[in-house]
Length: 214
Image (cartoon, rainbow, N blue to C red; front, side):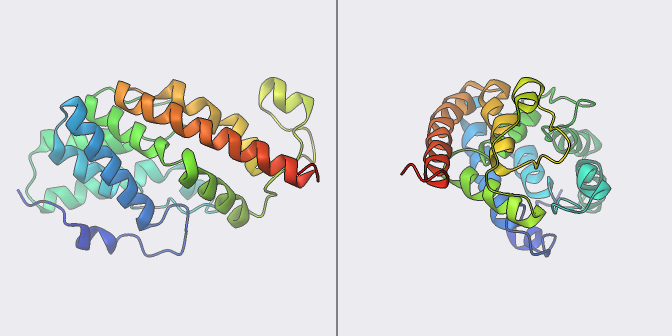
């Protein structure tokens, strides 16, 4: 059984995407290690899953491929680990971590401790100062505004009216503010609460500046 090295993993992330690039993968890797040590998880599974979780099709703006990147990445991970003579039990465990890491994935929820940690670590990267940079970067890549005042309908049910843009602030309200309550581990929940306070303050100031109030 051969481990995955960071040098090897870097070769799987060649597309120019500042939101889901290898720096994101390394941040998830480091956070997952931190949480795994605190929670008592299998570090071999954690490290492999973190390095492989966005390995195929994660770039924003790629349509169906982006929506199904967890499936493509899990399939790729299984092939990579099979070549490295990993036991099928561990391959399946890594694949489950990858399949269950997406926020918008009602089909498969994280069931194992390792899958919960990968989910938490990936979502923590969407909060705090890094989260602010990423959500603005994603909007730039997608060609949507940093800020647009949400409609009453969006605020009520999370669905835009016709002609309304899904701005970075919309994403904050729709997804990012909900992340702490979606955390699976106590370790991640504490980090998420602190990071959300920062992100809330960031958007409050950005909106004030946007509207010329500051």
